Amino acid sequence: MRRQSLLVSIFFTALAVFSPASFAAYPDKPIRLIVPSAAGGAPDVLMRALAAQLSVQMGVPFVIDNKPGGSYTIGTMDLVRSPPDGYTLAYGNVVSLATNRSLLPNVPYDIDKDLTLISNAVRVVNLMVVNNNVPVKTVQELITYAKKNPGKLAFASDGNGTTAHLGVELFKSMTNTYMLHVPYKAATSGLTDLMGGGVQLMMINSPVAGPHAQAGRVRALGISGSQRSSTYPDIPTIAESGVPGFEVVAWGGLMGPANMPKELVTRLNTEIRTALAHPTVKERFKALGAETDPSTPEAFRELSRRETEKWARVVKFSGAKVD
Image 1 (cartoon, rainbow, N blue to C red):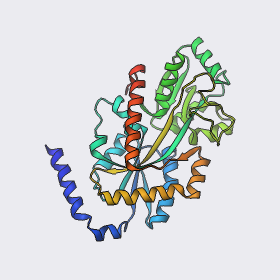
Image 2: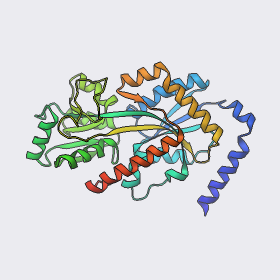
Image 3: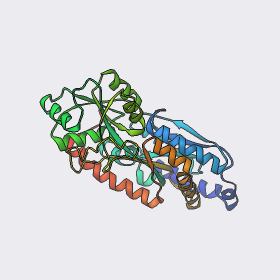
Image 4: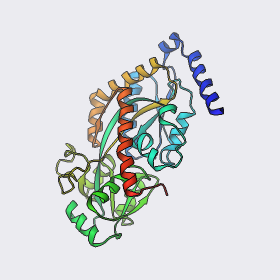
């Protein structure tokens, strides 16, 4: 009852605040963009590139606020508690908008009731990389080695339910192999441990792993998309390397709290789509191994629903859970 009363109060406050005049003046102060992961990770790097262009277009600063932890729930709950006035937005992705529904026993927010999905923004494939001391150079050699040494390989991720975690769980289920999962709070921490030999394998967003693979600090075996990446054309897909049908794509976009006025959502959707079409943003994303992927609010919500169903099957088959 208390929660319902709070939502009703927020709704009527929004109606009172957003007069036609206020829409015309929006925005007239900095906009906070919550990124529910650590600085330096793929979401942070990509959102900073998008925020820079949005700042130019809309004439106010977009201030990145990193709030990692809790499988993206900490940052997302900060958004849920914010007024729906367009001055607090957040990055929502495959974790916060899909896999959490299957992995967390009690998700503290309701995706369908507590969030306004505005537009998807990015698609990122993952690179499967190994420590240079692991005696494999291809995906097939990895499969053979893992079968001969069950449990000897440990793979890092940036937390339970991320594509770095469930992507390897999907790989294990499709190749009948076993590897130990070691979750970290940030992708960069896991990658650092991978390079140091603390873990042996990681399926990590290409914007983070790519530069290290190109520099020879880790060895890239395969890419998780259905097609080779134009950024890393020499790296074969995992599907073409003997695991047909394998595909893992990370995605994410911008969202706001519940009850954002339709006019405000439309304005922000237009600004985001314009920013993502700008050559500077497209080139920056491409340089990071990502693709711009704008959408309507309705398509963004459908993506969330479809991916929820896909990863729920992986979670059930693998027995993956939050530690």
